[in-house]
Length: 268
Image (cartoon, rainbow, N blue to C red; front, side, top):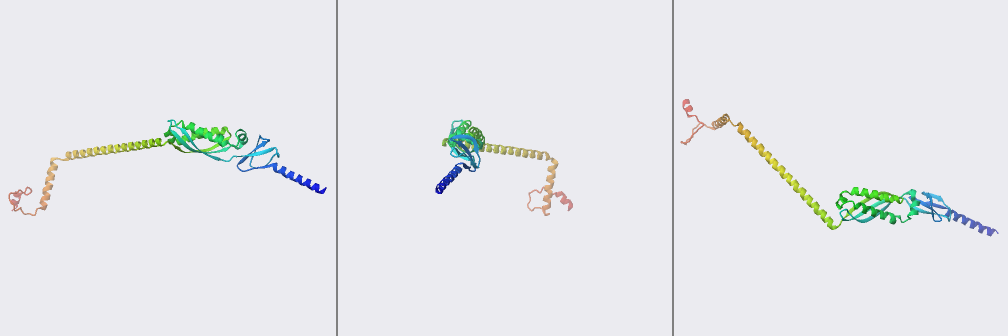
C-alpha cells in the first residue's frame, strides 16, 4: 500500500510539474507574444516577461518588434526610359499593438511577402516620375517620396517604416559616358565664357587707360603757354651758365648762344 501510494504521489507530482510547465510562458525582450488557442489567434497580446496560459490548449507565438533592416537592389526605368539600378536599405518594425493581426493575416514570412514587394513597387513608381539626371540631382526629394509611399504600404500590413536610405542610382555604361561628355562640354563652355569675360574686361581696361592718357595729354597741351616756353629756355641757360668755367671755347666758328658778348666787353 505504501509503495502504491508513493507511486501515485510521484505521478501526481510529475503531472503537477508538467501542467505548471505547460501553463507558463516567457516572452523575450524585443518581442510580443501572439496567444493561440487551439490554433485560433486570440486578441490578447503578451508583453515581455512571464505569463500564464492554459496548458495543452493555448500556445504562444513570439513576434519580433525591434527595428529590422532589409537591404534590396531593384531595377527600374526612369521617366526618360533609362534603366536604373537602385540599392536601398530600409529599417522597419512590426507594430507591437498589432502583432496578432500581422500573424493572423500574413504570418511569419512578412518580409518576403510584404516588405520586399513593397520596396520594389515604391521604387519603381517613384523612379518613373523623374529623369535619370533628376534622380541624381534630386535624390533627397526622391527618397522622401519613396519613403512616403512605402510607409503607407507597410502601415496597411501593421508595420512601421522607421527610415529609408537610397545608397546609389546606377545607370548603364552608355548613359554614364553621355553624362561625362555633357559635363565636359559644360565645363569647356564655362571656361570659354570666363575667358571671354576676362578678355572683355582687359579690353575695357585698355580703353579706359588710353582714355586717361589722352585726357592727360590734352591737359598738358592746355598748360603749355609762350610764357612757360620762355621760362623753360631761361632755366636751360641758367643751368648752362652754372657749368661754364669762364673761358671761351678755343674753336672758332661755333656759336655760344648763352653768352652775352657785349656785356663782357663793357665789363672790360
